[in-house]
Figure 1 (cartoon, chains in turn orange, cyan):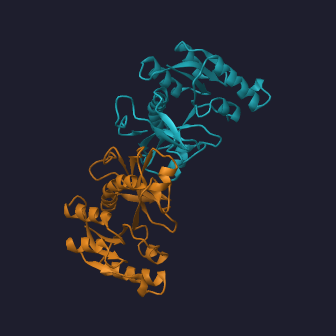
Figure 2 (spheres, chains in turn blue, green):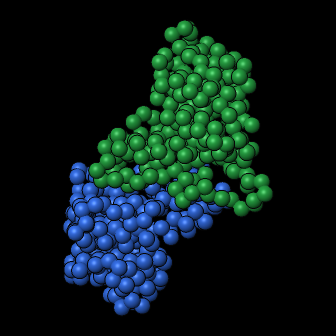
Figure 3 (spheres, chains in turn red, yellow):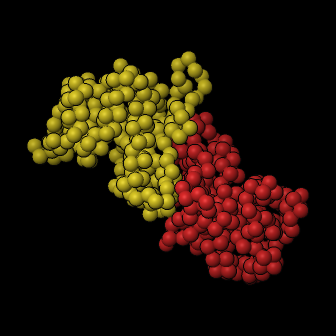
Length: 217
Length: 217
């Protein structure tokens, strides 16, 4: 059973999707600890409701980002975390965390990367006049949304869309993609070939399977 | 019935998809003329087989790109073309053509633009480790693959993919997207809002319809 550390700052809807997938045994993983850097964030309540240790690690207490991340690493290790999942964690992480969990830190981003990295991805897709956008779960590297891609899902951009309606449509797919990406790690199917992810075939099934027509991994 | 001028340089498989859609009355359009700049291109044979005027306009005969495009415009006008469709036309076009057919020149590109413009789009998607790519029909402007997007389709990138297998999977969607985009023009549904395409609702059906789960317009 793979042990997850989920880092969140806000409402934590992706955290909830992960908690639900674990509780339903849909994926061979469990959330070992939830860490939040914002007091009162709904993510903390979600963790508590699910009976998962919830830790508030406020950044004001630490002189530097490195010091914060060193404490974060110690905390994740104490909870024997195998895989770190950023789920709306609104804070830049440092090589201190990345080197402690090498290629084991995931992030989710609301676009089909490498399109529209950074903030306001849904707005950027609308401004580009795109008819398709989506979301991406990727391994975190030193760049901004540049790491190896694990899972992507595509969604249509509709004519009447605002940033909010498009972001909501993408978010629904995020909730499917993140558990799927975690399952691929928990099943030992993810391997890196340079900067590309290759998936090992699932055990007992040599054929590569797509989990759904819209979700691509 | 909208009259199309299709410009091709190579095998013309997108031309064939357009010819087939017209012949099957799947779209309210007809190919008025096919223009090719390469002698012996299969596109010319396809036009002849379909009973459509096929014109070889070799660029060697013209001193400048502008002179070539002026002749092209004259030719398209003689055939009373309403909409110009670039279908693997391996030649840069000039403002001479674009101003004569303002917002009426379409192109198809093998990626989800604005991702991977220019040559070798499938190779670029593989190099990026993308799990999703696709194709785009767009209105041509002065830039390279920068014009307003009309239709896009998404396809998965599979682990074993080479540039050739991915390009072939994308090409199959191109053959669906191009007729779809032409139909939207022929039905008078395409309007421009700045640099974004907005689609008018189809007549008699106020609800916006997606033509399929994978094809987004």
